[in-house]
Length: 291
Ligand code: CO
Image (cartoon, rainbow, N blue to C red):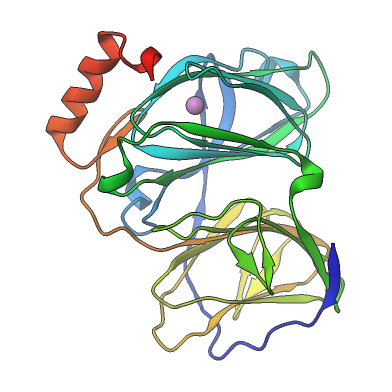
């Protein structure tokens, strides 16, 4: 939309604290996916609770989709790289998510939804991220936005890096979604060989990068395709610098930690066990469908 944009200069870029390789699992009605961020990282990467990657050319791996299931207490962000998926929920929303688009759903006090492939063949690829809500926001009314590919602001740097700004602000470009409290930054970067991308970021924000094409270097560390790099919170660091050694694509995600207790049971994420019991009760008694 704008550009070219000059690359920012970052003092003491963050280092890779740990590399994470996802594990294969299946969810919904048997969709094959790779879980990159799971429960054991939800404290370290607070406010993020989960990141799944799905990608297959074989309809057998995805065709059954995710039939009706509930969520309470957090937000789900689905980013499609390729394919079409239809969303329907108990709050009366319906929409088709297409290649390059994002669905942002604030489940709040409760939603029941389905996410089903709108295709019988071809590639389906994308990501689902779970973003926690603060205690004060967990019981708000649900909302959802279906953001088409063309509605996601993007810019190109002087080195030819294309940055899509799904959430937050980068290089003065405001993303499609802005959220208070957790202040998520969600960038999809496309880097030509030899280019670098720099992002200013306050050190207290938790941040990670996930490489899904090619590989990149962060500090001295190579981050290979399908690796997630947790980036350290050095208090003297001004942000993140990613170098591409070959053409690469990577997600860069950051957010402000909530530092609140996390009580999680399946698709319910609250602060206490009592609130989890309440969520299960409300779901069983059909109260989610009323929101
Ligand atoms: Co869902």
